[in-house]
Image (cartoon, rainbow, N blue to C red; front, side, top):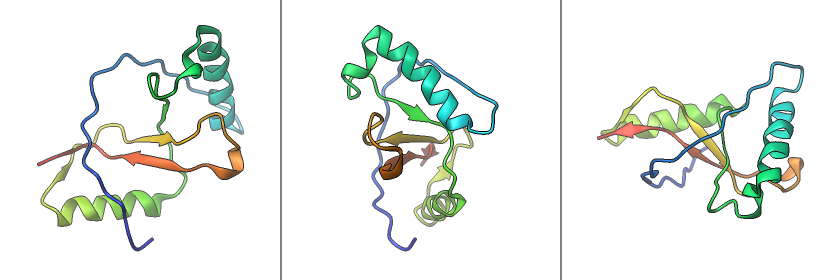
Length: 106
């Protein structure tokens, strides 16, 4: 990964629901639990109003690239939860595209 499209965004405070699964397919199993709960409440009808974030990205090179960007641009990594936001959480599992959120301070 050579070029990063980096934007500084400030997330508004929000209420969250968290799901965790310990299994051979934890991301899939956690998503199925969350999807069942959120769909019943209508939250999946507007994912812009009710965004869906994840906690795991299986590619450590991407996170390392972000960490390097932070250090070279006079920021500090806050060392709290990093987030991933899938562009289309209801889309195909094979065609996932994510925005990654790394907490920083100036």
